[in-house]
Amino acid sequence: MVRAPCCEKMGLKKGPWTPEEDQILVSFIQKYGHGNWRALPKQAGLLRCGKSCRLRWINYLRPDIKRGNFTREEEEAIIKLHEMLGNRWSAIAARLPGRTDNEIKNVWHTHLKKRLKDQTSTSSPASSASNVTSQSAEPENMNSPQPSSSSSDVSSVTEVSAALTHDNHQDMITIKGENMELSETFPEIDDSFWSEALSADNSSIPLEFPEATNYQYSGELGFTFCPNMDDGMEFWYDLFIRAGHGDTPELPEF
DNA sequence: AAATTTGCCAACCGCGGCTAA
DNA sequence: ATTAGCCGCGGTTGGCAAATT
Image (cartoon, rainbow, N blue to C red; front, side):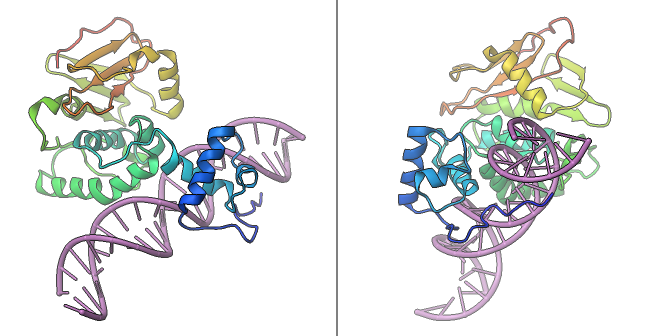
């Protein structure tokens, strides 16, 4: 099947967006939504292809985009999620509210990959790898706990996630807390798994950031880890294990 | 001060999945 | 079952700014 290029028609503008174009796009979407990206630029009077409009909206103009540098906790979460999910940036972005896949991808390539490389080169090369990056072009051992530059009470997410391993070959995921170890067979993590788990029990997602570090068991669906952070950043990190494991495990104390 | 290199980020490209005809 | 079109995703790149020589 032959596909016509997105911007085959001549006269469509490319490159950086101007403030005027941004304004037109935002106004249009606020009024009419974005049901059809293909038709949108024409209807809005923009000399752009729908793809370009979509990208601009998703990555920059969306009202729920979080601005500013990534916090240490966000970076740690990206590292661990990348360890679990590989280069599935959209899936990782879905776990980091306000961050886009493009942004996360950029941070990974410009900061985190380099940092991990430095860390692994200074740590023992003999440490066994348990990564899930089989789909990733950059299989790296990211199992080494990351030194945290922040204060100790930021530790919940980093410690929990650092203790979370997934052995792709054995299809086993292990959660280790101070007082517990829980293993579950885990055939595959894919997008439908995450979305189904989420839609099945939204109550596990904290609407507001809790004051205290919170560990929450969500029935058969999984766990939500809520870090206790001073800056009140909107962040949650949850791990869903496969449904149907039977009894509720004893809750660990983090 | 000028030239060159490096880092970063926004945006583009092309592929694959999904769906409607 | 096939085809065509749209959308979303991941990989890549162009261009700007900062850092270095």
